[in-house]
Length: 119
Image (cartoon, rainbow, N blue to C red; front, side, top):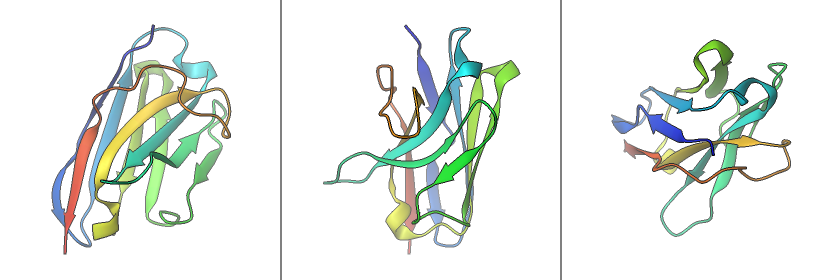
């Protein structure tokens, strides 16, 4: 079982930046797609960004041009650099391994990290 630990969230004003990190246990990290998801209050979890084992990336339209996903396979860590944050980015952010860009997370979800953007 892979364990996922997200960190880096916090309270930031609109227009500000945050960098999220997600550390995954286990030795299979490098072969899978890694995704950042988020769940805002009253909504379903949505995929925000993903990165393949070959460093190909996907971004939801709502964050394209503002967020950047990256990964460090040696550290089993995936990052999400979030710039020009908006109040609508407020959510709990989660990471997970994915079999493909079209799939959901493969493992039990971690606790997530809360991002709050004030207007």
